[in-house]
Image (cartoon, rainbow, N blue to C red; front, side, top):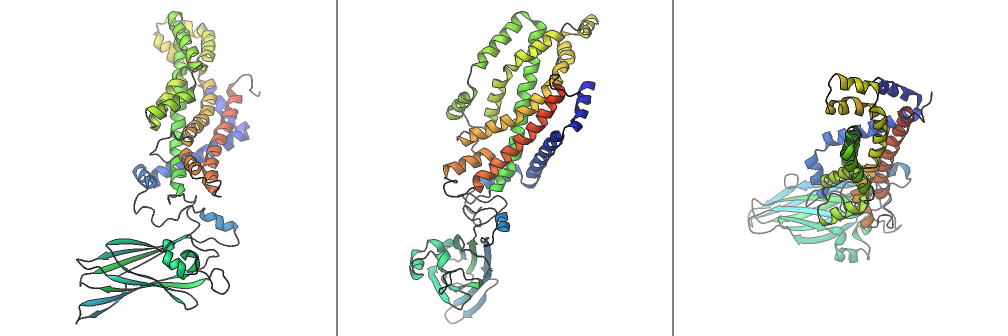
Length: 444
C-alpha cells in the first residue's frame, strides 16, 4: 500500500494526469446531475415518448447555442395559450348561444420561418360541439381565415398540413406563407395574433386553445425526428456509460487477478485447467458472441454486461499475472506466512494479490473507455438496450434516419464528442499511471 500511495503522489509530475482527472470528474459530476435532476423513471418515460410528451418540441431542431454564431437567427418555439376564462364572452339569452373570442398575440423577431404550426383545441360540452372560426392577423394589417371547424373534445389542427390553406397562400406551406412579406418575399417580423371566434351552444361549454409555433433551434443538444430532446440521452448516457465501463472493468480484472493467483499458488491440475480455459477463451470472438446473444436472446444491458465480464475473466491477462505470481510465491514473506499457519486463501488474497495490484490499476483505467465504446458499438448496430437512452442509441437513431445526409450534423457530433471525451480522459490518466507503476516506463 505504501508503494501504491507513493505512486499516486507521482501523478503531480504528469500534467496529462491532471487533465484526465479533470475530465473524469466532469463526467462523474454530469452523471450525478443526471441522476438528481432527471430521475431514472422520468428519463425512460421521456425517451420512450408518447402522446402529449413532446407536443411542444420541434422535429430535427439544432441546439439553441447555434444562434450565438449566426447572423440570421433561427426561430425558437413559441407557445401561446388562451381559454374560456381569459376570453370575452357575450351571451345571447334568447337563443341560448354564447359567443366567445380568444386572442393569442405574439411577437415574431426571427430571421427564418418556423418549421411547423399547430393549434391544439380542447372543448368541454355535453352534446353539441362548439363551432370555431380561426383568423390569422399579420403585422401589416392583413386578416387571413385559417378555417372553420367543429371542435371535438381534444383536436389538434395541423396548420402546416392544411392543403386548402396552402392553396389560399399561393401554394406556399402555411409556416412560410403566413409569415412572409407579400411584397419582399422575406420574413415579416412584428406582432402577430391568432383570433378564435367561437359559438358555444351549451351553458357549461368551454374551449381551451394552445398555439405552438415550432422553431428550428431547441434545447442544449437539439431534437430528433421524434421531437425528443437529445439532451436527455446525452445526460443519462453519462452514468450508464460510466457504470457499464466501471462494473465490466472491475468485474473482469479483479476476478482475473484472483484466478491467476489461485492457479499459480495451487499449481498442478488447478493451474492446468485455468490455462486451458484461458487458451480456449482467447480464440473465441467476443463481438460475434455478443451479436448472437443480442439477436437471439436478449438486448438487455445487464445481460450484455454479464457476458462481457464472463468473456473477460479468462483473458490472456491471466498468463501475465501468473508469471508474476510464480516469482512472488517463493518470496521470504510468503514462506513466513506459511510458517505462522496462514491459510491458502489468506495467502492468495492478503499477500499475493496486493503484490500485483499496483500494476493492475493502469490496465483497469485503460479498460474502462474500451468497454464504453463496446457498449456504444453494440447500440449503434442495433443491439443496445431498447429502453435506455445511451450515446450509442442516439448514434443508431441518427444513422437510421440519415442524419448526415440531411445535414443534421449535431445529431452525430454531440454523442461522438462525449464518447471521445470519455476515452480521452481515461486514456490520459491511464497512461500516466502506467508510467508510474510499470518499472520499464517509470521516470526516476
